[in-house]
Length: 589
Image (cartoon, rainbow, N blue to C red; front, side):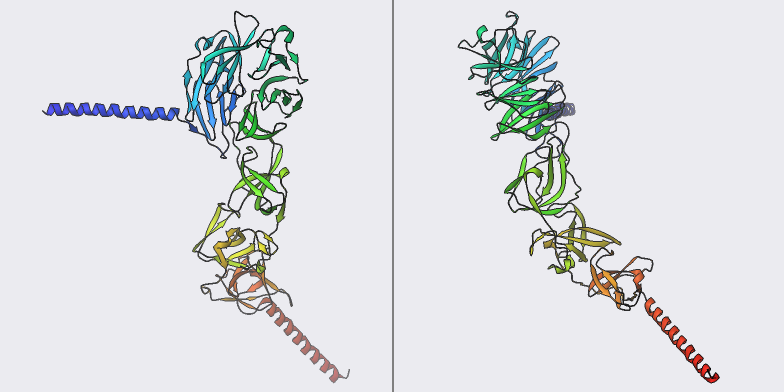
């Protein structure tokens, strides 16, 4: 019986072990295929690895690209990867609503890969391409039309020197059909085709041509390609919003399909592919430059820098050199995520107040920005060229403020911030109801304080620290306890009629609290140290600081002793003069 029990237990242990291994495999697999969250410095930037050989395409707000032999898809802040998605080098990539088409070349062999994707990422490659999956026939120039149909050129071995255009239905790659061909021996670098157009457009020798398709779709010899613009050095073109967007060595151009008029959009060369997409009714053009992809906002006639994707991050400044309140005088202004990413994160309206922290210039956008924050801590970048504002000065006469020169915390612990805005870095916490010296009220317009902070200073271990406190966290200072040091000192002036000043802080740059004459007495606020530069004293129920060299701990002051000595000398001299005069009279002079 015991034998069977042990056998049962061993069997049960083996089953448990197999079960645990299965769970571990499932967890590992889940982590392997799950979308990875990238590290990023801002909530609208993706950190992506790209090189000069990377291909990319965009569909709405979905971005696909290659790096090595891996395929990636990105949306918002999430990147999903498909490692080792293909063999060889990617020479073409296109994405539509549900699928990704990838063309790879490995030696002399071309292969088309077709992927499904959804909100969870890229699914496995499909095998519905039949003979096109691996072929030695020349297949090139993957593209798509505005309906999401894919196209690629194919040079049949049976049709020498003829380039064929094929399309696939957006729903099924198996529905391949011949829709056009070019009956000539042109060396086509790139082309444009979409069903509703009467023409097919091509880049031949770096120039832009078009040919009339005719009723039979195939251009006849009499309707051969003709040049439509003087643009040269073209390498890639796409259709977007009624225009042809062309990439050249000198920048991006647009050609209006109806009028064939052209205009330059950018001055910088995009060395690789270009793409376009409409995202939330806004139009964007994307261009591959080296290891980065640049995103431009497009309004139908001009391009403006908007974003850049690569493996670097924009790091926001943490130390600020301006720190002043401003009032917007233009009708409105946008706050952007960063100079690198021109995503709008907030807006300012006419007469809104905001805190200017620092100013920077960003090379890629060739623009100057102010890094600003609202009182609630909402930060953003204000484009200097698109907004006007007025600096609002503080009231630096602390004695005239409602709180006065001296303040204290309203709570047992009061936070002192490095800068005057919500969620700013905390410098320290003042425990108890220690005295704070008010420097200014940050910003005041007319008689109204417009920023909810005070700039204050405090002394800790003999050092002066400066920061900001919320106006709701402090009140006028009231000394709640009697001084622990019951000794007095006297003011020791340097000369007759001169004054000795008391300061709010141990610095001659701080506010003068009082001007005293020689001999006036003050209570010490701490033990007297004759070697210290400053001595803390009590003046009218508040703390103040006086230079140690200008006080006397006990007895007569230096000036008093000097005056006594001088008086004695005068008296002695007078006595001597009187005696001398009396002697002269006796002698008969």
